[in-house]
Image (cartoon, rainbow over all chains, first blue to last red; front, side, top):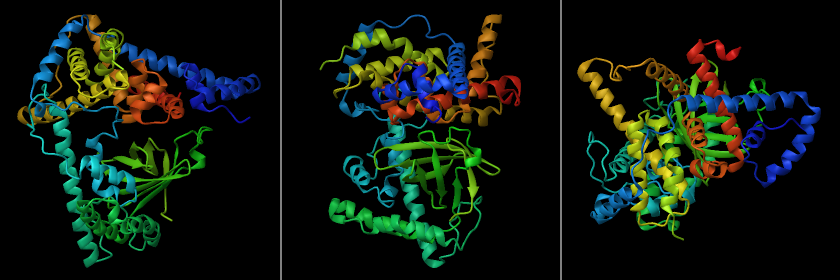
Length: 327
Length: 171
């Protein structure tokens, strides 16, 4: 049997083994009898678990003394319900992961179809629309009782979406005028104008967008699909992508752990492709600091967010990847 | 099926406040946000399938909005006064000082984690099960152990680096 997966060790320590993992653990226990390395790793995992718990506990009292009476909250809720419906949003955050919330998706919506995640795009079109609904917000108002937070999110999302659409159109125009031209606002990228690989790789994705059946969408949505086409062209024409790969040398025996990215390509137009556990994912990246990046990628079912920090020879953070020449 | 919110309130209040406090680093504000999350739950028109998960999701969103607004305020303040915006009242006792120091060290370590690692740690710390954490974050239940294990390691290492110098974590 191979060495025990780190996640299995932690899940067992947490008493959180699922039915399949229970079976795996039965094998793992036998393995522990004969593998000193795994015994050491199990002890280390137990130490880490204890240390993390102690640290978080040391960060302050579990809760400040006193809590309001439950009836008080019920009364406030009753008052809230009596308010005009326009003043609140009852479904805020329901059951959504943080990278699945409308705010997170809004800015990405215009690009989703372009990268071929058609059904998600359709869902967005049908449920969210490309522009978030108008919600009055005040920039500096303290968060009140009327859901200002979501309003701000929608506002941000709408601005992001528009900025991206505008940028996509501008980039497409620039690409048409001068196919070799670098997309602007990317001062850090290494120029690789002859990067044919990128163009080849981008082909299936962008073709999927071009071939998207307008009839699958509503009339308005068909127009949107056409608006996406210049973006697809821009994506093909741009160069200077940066590529990363997981280095076997950087592995520590846990390299095969679930959810480990294997390859990553960041295109200068803000699109990203990622291979995770052998599955391709597509999405977007943005710079969040001088050397920090945020990625949001989807496998067609849900969105994942990765935070990366650029190092001299690659990226660190949610993915430990080495810089490579783009294929 | 009707949700027994009173029972959830009794069993989840402390966990929720603790979770929020680790996000906004202000116990009173955490308490306010927890109340707001419960009031939203109680006044919701929609049926809530997973009440505890729903509460933590809404609370997490509230905390994120709070942090964003606080960031804007801080930025504004810094421009206006040119001074440190995060000045706090002087602690009065040795215990307060010690607690502030510990909180600051843990906060700094948490800040160095990715958003996902931090979220998973805080949800685990608040007592959520792997299933609940998976529902909350969109990760597969089978991936929680791996992610949590990595997050624990990073937290401990970041804390050691912050408190004992950059080489401490590599000893």
